[in-house]
Amino acid sequence: MATVPIKVKHQGKTYDVEVDTASNGEELMLQLYSLTNVEPENQKIMAGKMIKSDTMLSAVKWKSGQTITLIGQPSANVVTEAPEKTKFIEDMSEAEMARRADAMPAGLTNTGNTCYANATLQTLRIIPELQEQLKTYTPAASSAGPSNAASSLFSAEQLASVGLGGLGAGNDLTTALRDLYTMMKDTQGAVQPIMFLTALRQKFPQFAEKAKHGHGFAQQDAEEVWSQLIETLNQSLKLDEQDESNKCFGGFVDKYLGGRFESTTKCDEAPEEGEVHGSDNFKDLKCNIQSDTNHLREGIAIGLNEKIEKRSESLGRDAIYTKTSRIARLPKYLPVHLMRFFWRKDSKQKAKILRKVTFQHEIDVLEFCTDDLRKKLVPVRDKVREVRKEIEDVERQKKRQKRRRQEMEDDPNAEGKVKKDEPMQKRKEKEAAREAEKEKASAASTSSVAATDGAADVAMGGTEEVFKTDAEIEQERAVAIKAAKQDLLDSVDPAMKADSTANQTGLYELRGVITHQGSSADSGHYTAYVKKTAPDGKEEDGSWWWFNDDKVQEVDADKIEQLAGGGETHSALILLYRAVELPTIEEGKAT
Image 1 (cartoon, helix red, strand yellow):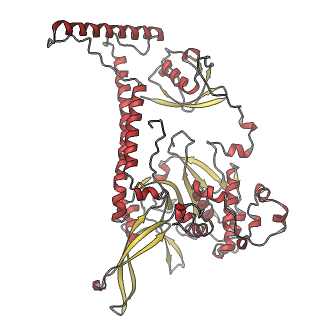
Image 2 (image 1 turned 180 degrees about the horizontal axis):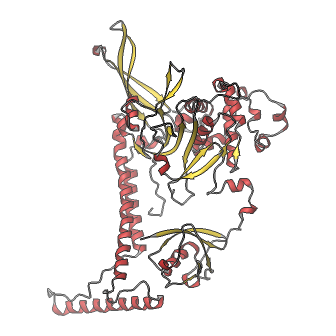
């Protein structure tokens, strides 16, 4: 089966439709009926030529992404929603265009070696909970900084509208971040993050280091600005203390990006010292890269099983200890830092490990968890995979049935079968005749059974294969998937349910990547890749946005596979994963 994605325009609206070129015009009409409520008999489809019910779609010269026109109105028997007032793109403001579901996001201007900050800002921006928390943020009086003439004469909104958001915030970095994201939300052009960079350099003077040639600021490490920004947000974004679920968290970052290790430390040279147990909080995982590290999980495992040197009281000297850490709480968002940079004494700069380290779009982190957490997560993870298999099975069933139906329609020896190239009226007549024959044969079969009083041989009404309708398949699909989802939700441990912002499946999906091109942290170029989100009610298409400072473009998922490193080309430096969440079941629906 070959399908072609097209767009159908009808009364000012555009619909995305997958055309099955092996079908006919009647099936396309039924597709459009489900979208527009225009009955097939009232439809006129213009695709270079008029498409009728008996038109074979394989005879139409389709082009991927082409737009065709549907003309027609629903009859009085069809209840439709009140039509929305059409607003054309040329009548939209810049902010309205930027907020459309399919709008290209804003880029950030490189003001001189600031790509490290731009890439970090674009990646953090994909966390919706952060956006919501920033809206309610008000800086403390002590952090607002000195006022100035501009900020006393104009409101924050007025300053932001001309690119000076955060001017009155002094060195309050969180306010500058909030205002910058507000500006980016309302434009598709490039935004100059001047006030954010000013606040960043005031709070952390290392980012104000001048370039060696004496012109402008020096290039910096994206890992450093990420860490400093995360720590700042953890201190400034406080949670509502009236909410009982927030009382065990120090701030927003702890709640959504904070995990917890449980560790065991043991002296390799003096086992008699016994083990020391501890607990540590973390806001990212480290992927250490050694000469034999090939995959992300190998690098993470190295970081969780480390050798440290410290003083041994029993030996009276420094000794080697092994510290083994396991995760006791998994956060909703999990940044993973690939430790590619190290300090070289000879060149006095941060050199880069160019080794190729592969990573996946979805990772399972249960092997890094404590035994207690693993026991809670294993049943849920397995049920998630069962739900996915259930969805895949019903989709395969639909495809098999459609293919089998197609084979029967194409079979010239299938007497009495409905042919796909027959006119609609003739097809309906054949369908009616077949139903009549079935009823007649069924009645004859029943009569014969009664007459022979349980005779072994019963006359059958025929052996024709009967197919389920799409509606029947959809209903079975909905019931089966709902049951699988409910089974999954019932398997969640009550203690896990109480922590709603923790990862409750043990699985993570990749949402953002910060990359570096070059051989040194203090040179080269940083960019960011962010996975495209889908409008409400639609599924993601797997494509990504590539943010290269002010240049923004859409790329396929295959591009992400090329970021594993292996040279001075763009290689992943920070991976931002999001927890694969539990499914939801709407009341009254089977999906």
